[in-house]
Amino acid sequence: MTTEKFPHLTMQPGGLGQLDELLLHLDASKLFFVVDAPAYKFSGAEASLEKILGSREVTWFSDFELNPKIEDAQKGISAFRKAKPDVVVAIGGGSALDMAKLIAGCGVQDGEPIDYIKKTRTLERNGPPVIAIPTTSGTGSEATRFAVVYVDGKKYSLAHDNLLPDYVIIDPALTESLPAGATANCGLDALCQSIESIWSVGATDESVGYAIEAVSLAERNLEDAVSRPNPEVRAAMAKAAHLSGMAINITKTTAPHAFSYAVTTRYKVPHGAAVALTFPVFLEFNFGLDATNCVDPRGPEAVKERIQKVLDLIGDGSLEKTMLRLNTIIQNVGCPVRLNQVGIQEADFPSLIGAMDVERLSNNPRRISAQELSAMLDKIL
Ligand SMILES: [Zn+2]
Image 1: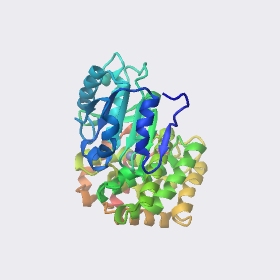
Image 2: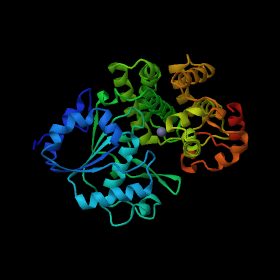
Image 3: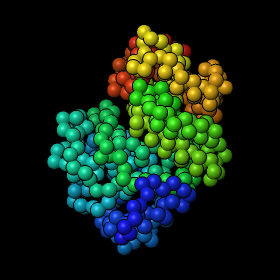
Image 4: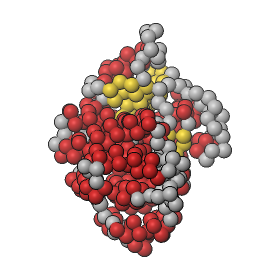
């Protein structure tokens, strides 16, 4: 075991090789692996880790769905409590990372996960160190203190500083086998959540700095990552995704995310595509805010100034050009830009609007009425 501090973040191709050294540093012999089983195999992680795991005691947990349910977390927590691991290692996309954060965070508490998810109790004890190793470039979950979990079909986000992974290894080589569809969805999530964090009521100079860099990287590299991937664009998208996570860890997401969850659960639209679907119209709506509907205490001009940075970056300063560019990116990566492409009809609007995540909505800089939202949806029907 070394006495030097191990870096919180390792970001480089081949970075997965650092895991051995990190486990030695942590003096960890009992490991609890939370893995997305197909991702673990196809990303190449399995082959790379075979040697270093050989001499260690490993408990595996991969019995969870893509959008994990509370029942999945409970199964994981039972296995975790039995294993009493020194370290939790998460390998996969956002679902695997969120699952590991929930297991390590809730597994060491006295209450049941539902108590913490529904906020009747708060996390008191610190769990074992969590090492997050994403195999997609998208959610940025490795950089956040949030974990999404579904209870009776409803989406909850548990938030606590204890959930922030202690160590992060970003190895863009792990994303090289990611299919085009998954690359597109994850990349759109990174792009959209970065822009959302810029207009979020919770935006700070620090979060805007991370987000602007993420938007710039994603805008320049996402289409290539989907249609002509190479190690450079994969590395750029991995960085964009991580920065987007750092940004939303400060600001949380806003209206497009709030609207997206019901689209994902009801119409089976993947998360990134569901967020991107309404994104250009939300951009237009938020940029049009004024003193009568501005939620940000800094006022409408401050919000517009922040959004203007995005327009300058990807649309030569123009709202129309930015909307057009976003639409082009979404289409070029094979994702829908109209509601009818995913089966949403006008008659579905009231129920979709009613299902919006109110907490995410409160981070949006402009107040939105059901009528206004309905009019926005009409534009992209
Ligand atoms: Zn997202």
